[in-house]
Image (cartoon, rainbow, N blue to C red; front, side):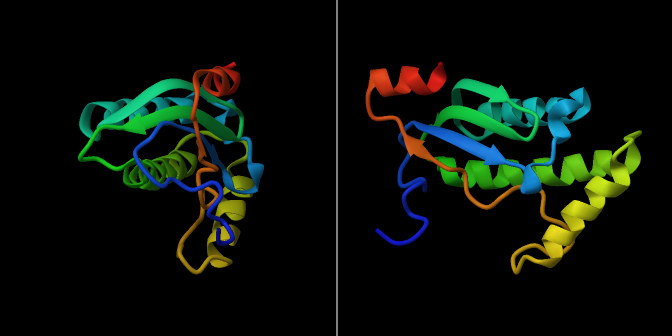
Length: 144
C-alpha cells in the first residue's frame, strides 16, 4: 500500500468520512457557513446520487457516513462538493459581516500560495480520511 492510500475511497462502498478545513479554522461556528454545507449536501443528494446516513458539522470539520448510487462516484461527488463549498464560504467571508474576516482570508490565501493545486486560496485539507464501513458494529461505532 502506497503512502496516503490507507484512507482513500476505492469504490462506491459506504465510508466514514472526515472533511477538514485547512488549519483547523473554526469557520462553522457561524450558522451561515453551516447553511452552505447543508444546502450543498442536499443538492448532492438530489442531483449527484449521494446517500448520507449520518453527519455532523463540527466547528472546523465535517463527519459523514455516506456512499453514492451508480453511475455517480463518491470521490467525484466529494470533490465537487468541496470545490463548491470552498468558493461559497470564501464568497460569504468576503461579502458578509465577519469579525475574523481578514485573519481567515489571510490564512486561506497563505495555504493556497503554498499549494501546487490551488491558486487563489485553499479551504479544505486534501483527502477525506475515508474509512470503509465493513460491518454493522463498526458502522454504529462511527455513527455514535
